[in-house]
Each structure stands twice: as C-alpha cells, then as structure tokens.
Image (cartoon, rainbow, N blue to C red; front, side, top):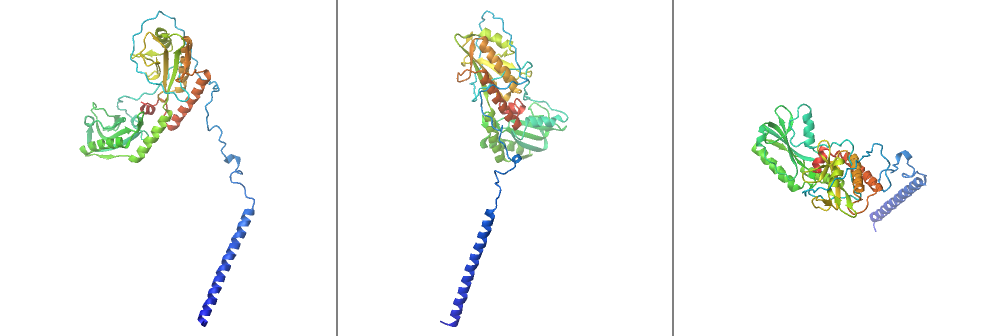
Length: 398
C-alpha cells in the first residue's frame, strides 16, 4: 500500500467520523430543545379561550314542538256571525279544478285579519314610468338574481313592433330604453323605439331550474335577432348563471309549501247552502268556477275553500278543504291566523272534524306549532330577499 492510499484512507475516516459526530450533536441539541418546549405549562387552545370569544350555540336550532305557542299581542281574533239557516237550495255543480294539498311535516293553514291583507301583484303590462321610478320598474321586472339578462345596444333605433317572441321555456321579459330616457316593458302594440334592450329569462320557477339546453336556445334566439339588426349583445357568464339557477331552485323547493286543512263530515254530509252562508259571512267570495276565495284588496287570492273529494260542489259535501299557498301570500302569519280560525269555526258550525291530510285531528297546540314553522319559512324568504307575496315571489311561485 502506498503512502497516497494510506493517507486517503486516513482522511476519509476522519471525514466520516466528523460527519457522524456532527449529526449526533445536532440530534442531541434538538432533543434538548424539544424537552424544554414540552415541559412548559401551555394553555389549552380550546378550553382556555375567554368566554366572550366562544359561541354558546343557544337558540340557533329550532326543534318542532307541540307545546302551545305564546300568545302574540297583535294576533287577530275573528268574530264569526252565525248565519241564519235557510231552506236548502240546489247549487249547480261547478268546475273548480282541485289541487292536491301538499302538507309539510306540519300542515299549515291561515285566517284573515279584519282588514284584508294586501298582496303585491305582478303588473301584466306596465306602462312607461316617468322620473326616477323607471329604474325601480326595470329592477322589479328584471333582476340579476332571478334572471339571465342579455343587454342589447343597437346602432339604429329598434321599433317595438320588430321585436320577436324570444324562445324560452321560462318567463321572458323584454325592457326597452326609450328615446326620452326611460325604461318600459316592451309590448308589440307599442309605438316606442329603443336604443337599448334588456331581455331576461327567468332562472327558476315551479317547473324547476333553467337547464343548459333551455339557456342555449334562448341565447341563439337573441343572437339571431341581434345579427339581423346589426346590434351588439352581451351575455352573462352562462356557467355561473346555471349554478345560480340550481341554487335558486333548491331554495324555492325548501319554502314552496301548499297548506291544506280539511273539515270532514262525521255522520252526514254538509249542506252546501249552509257552507255558502258560513263562507260568505267570513268574507269569502264564490268564483265562477265554484270555489270560495278569500281575497286581498287588490284581488289576490289569500286562501281558498273547495270540495275535498275532487268532485264538483253539489247540494252536499262529505268534506271541505282549505288551501293556503305559503310563498305567494303577503302578511302570511296574520292570514294564517284567520285561516285557522275560520277552519275551526267551520268544523264547529258544521259538526265536522278538523284534520290534516293524514286524517289526524288538528288541535290548538298543533295549529300553534304550524304557525311557528310558518314564521320560520317566512324568515328564510326574508333573509333571501324574496318577501312573501312580493313581485319576486309571485314570479318564482307562479
């Protein structure tokens, strides 16, 4: 072995020993630091947080209860006048279509206050609004939260008579910006001419959410119109709007409740003449189709009274059904109070039984529980910015 080889072995051994010693020293140092850190008496991050920094979780969850609700100060207590019974008069059969009542885990019903509750109506074909109100009109009939809105800017004025029927499986609303700088709902018979147009397709309704195919067909219809008039159109992002449509539909499905209360005959059928007198004394009006409607000042139906067995009204009835369309009624809790009181009054006056759709008797406690849950539904709608009975609600739950 040469001196060079021997020296190389010695140097390599020294290097290996040095590396080993250094690693041992590093391990020893870190072990010592770790033992010092864990030896300290540190506070618990969860248990030792100050009380004012911790949520109590109280009153955030509402469980159904059959306990009697607390008396509300402004709750309406109706007084029903007992009608003088007249000889039975044959009532011609009517053609009132029956809607199968949908009852939530807690059926809902609703009575009416002494002064009828006014519900907001969707204007059929509103005229042009002058002044600052034209912006309010545009936002009520077209809302980015509810509609997919295409904005058109024309190089030349477009007459209202030139507007086609845009393809859309949902509600389509066209708004035009007139030459005197105001927005109006476009109708074919108008003589107006527009520099700008907004064409909205509703994102959801009671038939479900807007689909990709439906949206594409609408966009193609608008694009074809734009190309014919050498105009420019801007569309919102389609994928984002389809997601918004699904979310909106899920919300609507959670609050879309049709409440049914049934008054069933115990031994013999109810004479319809007596039912008519009781309904009219309570403020209900019989429609040409035969059902009885309780309406607001504006003519909006707040709840209905119809035959229970899907048949037309005749001389007698074995059961009556009262229906209350929850999201479409403004002032719903007050209307519910009157609705429930009227149903109870009917059951007593006709010697019938007040039951839900499962034929279970409805007590005062269960009606109060329904009233509580109705308040929860309306609170959800208010939080979403869709007030019960508002233009938006009437559009979504048409």
